[in-house]
Image 1: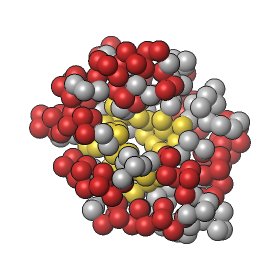
Image 2: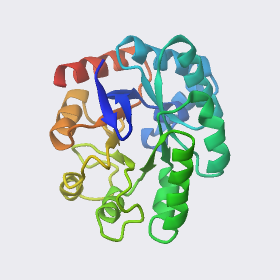
Image 3: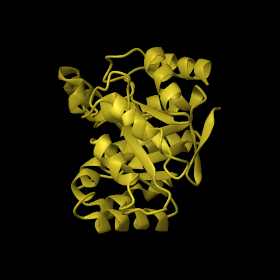
Image 4: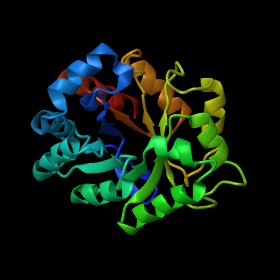
Length: 248
């Protein structure tokens, strides 16, 4: 199994993502189809989480909805599966309590909170990360505006100072869904050190990029990094696992 350091924890290099299960908007009309098939059926999501484990990548990136949490719990009953959680923004304190059933290695503040709080309510963002540390997980922040977030993290005025904090970032070679030129974001990423390990999302740009192209670029640009990629069937999972094994 390929495992990498992620702050104070270790995670598989490839995690099964959850975005297709919740029908995320970037998937267009297919998103509704996948939402209807997966979201209220934990056993169907659990089947794919477990298949990642069987492929040698026992890890999942779980968005804190109750049905997705339940799917991960079911898989953990069968496998030694590590979990990274993205908290829901509406009531993050309650959600933090709810996801403890998974004993997550890493917990990320939701991108909606990061992007809203980073510049004007930074103390609240720091408090959220402190609460995550208190439950024994390594804290991180997700963002949908990686250029602004990375610029802040690297600045002398960063709310986080020298604290180690993970980053869940959209990263792909086409710059899709990044909100800025990929060249500018890549330059910022290369300035980070081990205090800010990266987990990449939107790696395949919602299916617009083939796994080998996307992951080859990712490993050349951000090394080491962990990729969280959602799938909707076992064939996609097999292709991802084979690609990662060949590249690492």
